[in-house]
Image 1 (tube, rainbow, N blue to C red):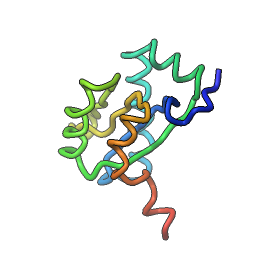
Image 2: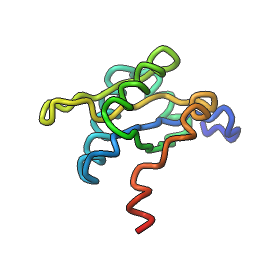
Image 3: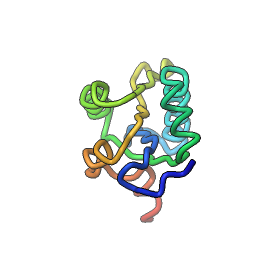
Image 4: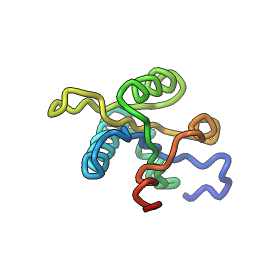
Length: 117
């Protein structure tokens, strides 16, 4: 079922650190989505069946990502990914209705700097 009302549309929002390479950003955002699917199977299935819509945003660095995690983990289903290869948190994925997305409007789209070159 697709929800036509944009205010009620659920999206998976992936937020990945902007201080990573393009390749790392892609891989890390996939990791956080996989974590989300495993940790929150019911919201993941509902999102997949209803909208299957994804937004990919950037956080400035690890501390910024952790601040976002702290803010949203109590508001919605949310998963963060820790990359052991770099010993750091690299990406988070959250279940976002319009109220959550409004709080994220100040974050840039991932890859925007590449698209503007």
